[in-house]
Amino acid sequence: MVLGGSRGMGAAIVRRLAAEGRPVAFTYAASSGPAAALAAQVEAAGGTALAIQADSADAQAVRAAVEAAVARLGPLGVLVVNAGVLKGGTIDQFALDDFDHMLAVNVRGVFAAIHYAAPHLLDGGRVVVIGSNTAERIGTPGSSVYAMTKAAVAQLARGAALDFAPRRITVNTIQPGPIATDMTADLMDYILPRLPLGRIGEAGEVAGLVAWLAGPDAGYMTGANLTIDGGWSA
Ligand code: NDP
Image 1 (cartoon, helix red, strand yellow):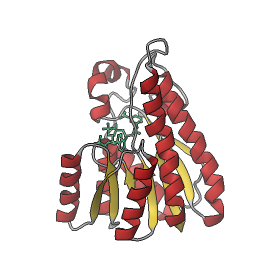
Image 2 (cartoon, helix red, strand yellow):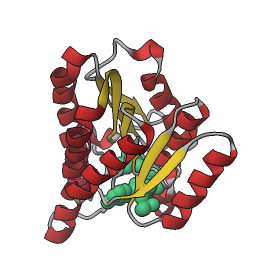
Image 3 (cartoon, rainbow, N blue to C red):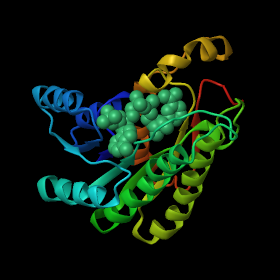
């Protein structure tokens, strides 16, 4: 199951996990068109994809989405919590409503997803949280609230790794740097000249890391923060 799977990295993760033969449920907040198109694309390729509308800011909607996914597809082998929002602004300018919304989606929504999925996760299953490289190095003014939310979930995931270790469920955080998605589309002028590798990352490259964490070689990795940012924070 992928929380926030209709666009960007989430959609790439849905495609990748489905291509590996896993039935995939995914949520979206508002993009019903892209979500339906993605599900149809996966089905046309012989896979199984179930799109579920659920705002991650609404914990009961997250609970209902998890239960719907389990009812249709069975217990969860892999949970990817990708849904996130980015709003920039220096602290003096940052509206409290935006602060609350970012915490609701980027932190409370991640907690709700893991909390409600926990009873349905298979022993030996995998949880992957999509955080951000800003959790460790911010580097850019106007990013404090976003970075705070991503630092919070990195630590939440580390704690969860210990909580679920007795069930051999691994919990890791992927911390991407600039990846070409709708989220970064307006930031290209700032980002592109600063990328050490001379190019921006592709959503599929993050999906590949998710696939590795979900696969048989990654069973001993848990509680890790994996940065994939083209050297941005090096
Ligand atoms: P996009 O904005 O391209 O896509 C976000 C996805 O999350 C969409 O599927 C969106 O659904 C979903 N989503 C957003 N808010 C909610 C919500 N309240 N409830 C449910 N689903 C929601 O983002 P990216 O693909 O770029 O980012 C994915 C994750 O990676 C985020 O957590 C982001 O913070 C993180 N990240 C991104 C980086 C980048 O450079 N792009 C770098 C570091 C981290 P809908 O289509 O319905 O809006």
